[in-house]
Length: 271
Image (cartoon, rainbow, N blue to C red; front, side, top):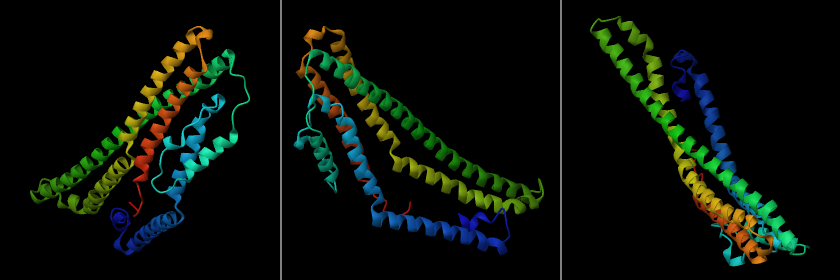
């Protein structure tokens, strides 16, 4: 882009300024990509994110002394230390020092499980809506840029043809040729870049994942509400523990889904 950006703004004698700017930008992109690959920036972010998600959602299970079986943990494509670290961190916390009375179970169910499920349900609904909106907006923006590129080229041809037919001065097309050349390259370039962001970002797929997760959590929240509305004496540890496991299973499935998507995204070249 920098190589032609001078056309509507400067003379050919000043082209070197724009070329130097483009070289600096390309060099920066290459340097960031190479350093990021060498230091595993993307992989390290991905791994630490996994640990954070495991620990965050495990907090609803610890007060009940419920844990996920080792065989039920997700498997990392390249590394397994996040799962290893999360399991041992949770094991170190140990069993809760509490009496599993009816009042304790109700408190855990109402103040911990219900709140956590409600927050996660609302979060995934909001996330799905935002991602779907981003998906549509990026599509529209990309299409608009390509449409503008077609309009730009068509306008120049009309001006050129009108000048030849003496409908208006030929100088109009001649004086604006650099501008239309720039637009003819810049608009589809930006349109393709936006389309690349849209495809690489997988907004639609992540929106679907959040939609499914939100629906599952909504079903669990209904069951929690039914238990809380019932007699306290009918509540037992098995029911609450089972709900905690279902919450954990739901969020772990969601984590596995976005892990599968992100694990296949390797930034090998600066795109």
